[in-house]
Image (cartoon, rainbow over all chains, first blue to last red; front, side, top):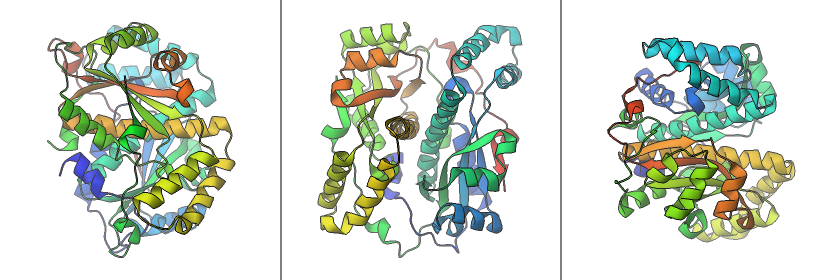
Length: 209
Length: 209
């Protein structure tokens, strides 16, 4: 199926079949695709938490107002934004880039300066919003990739982010929850899968100049 | 190619071949795929501006610090966030949903109340950030879809958003620039296309719980 057909097939899954699990190869395939998502300057301002532990998921469910996807889906994926995009983060990134491209770090001096300039002009709050937006971009890639693999998915924003951070121990890792998505396989009786998809009409969505 | 292979093929195109244009069918295919991107409550808090006009693109280029992609790419796509997510916007959305699903509007009363509650709890700034994040999610879908179609792409954040809004007449439409992406075909001598892709190592990107 094309990505377009895959996205037409998908819907925000409300009820997962809790007996069906995504196998390890498929999950890895999905994660390796998401890893290729682009980000500002390539900084990848987030980490991706894959939660399978049943007890942890029970607690997450409570922090997500009891929504059943948290425990019924095969996995809960939490995009967690980096809260500290500072000089050290950038310097490490430049060093990694030089190593991966087997080039002299000096050749990246202008690029490094550009990034350091960009972060110095932003407040902590602006940088966090910037990180969150990169996480959403990667979420868009994940939704496409999952749907292509026949994996049902439900991106979710209805949860207590502070509690998520606490349960997952994110704060001490310099991270905070951006957005989550539950992945797995739809229950056959999920009525939401049978509803017509609602999207803006072309003339309300697209402007041609 | 799978989405993973397509994303491995793509890179942030710095130099487009200005003689190559994306044909109308392919562009429409791309836009129809992006249209399927999910959003919070399905609200699609953005519009998508497709800019082809040469004179407008010259002005956008100036507002993007002279970056050549603005004029050399086949099209410039601007994701523009809705600045006014209010009761009227939600009511229209619910009416559209009822019409598309051929159901009684009354049956959506709870859903409508939930969305109205969610927007009433947010300041204008929070709602705008929320809109921006949905636009980034759709950008992630666009990047995947373009790459699958063999369309090169370069998401960009380096521009004066205020000037973009002015040039494109977005303010009077209740919109403001979220993020842009240039699409087209890479110039054969774009050296950036030949560099190894830099991504976090699995152990730095993924956390398993």
